Amino acid sequence: MPKIIHFIYSLSWILACLLLGKLLAHYVDILPASLYGMVFFAFALHLKWADANRIKDSIQWIVKNMSVCFVPAGVGLMSHVGLLKSHGLMMLLILLGTTLALITLVAYLSVKFIGDDT
Image 1 (tube, rainbow, N blue to C red):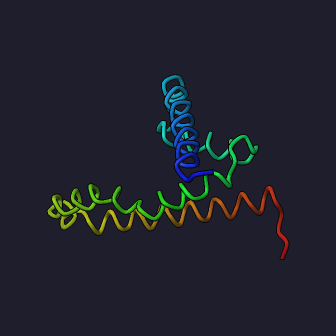
Image 2: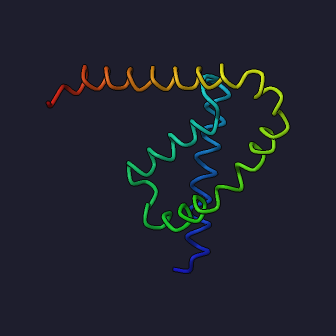
Image 3: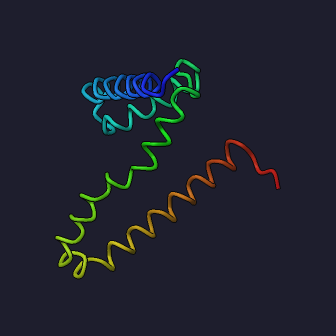
């Protein structure tokens, strides 16, 4: 099949999952709609509702060009350099602390529920 058909198929699945995520986020406002959509997309792939082979090329293209999405964040960082200078150390400590706490929690829960194989 032509690549354009695979791209339309991929885009249809992504947009459908995002729409489901938006609907769920409207009623259950805990997570952003895009995260709900990613969960729906992962389930669709896992349950083989969506054909991973048809989606693969489009997803690889999206990931390869994803850096364009981070340009606004970089501009935002540059426009708030003053805040980074005054609060940067505290932000770094919070980032490292929460990362360490999350890794510790995941390790603890995985040992508790999966078991220790060592």
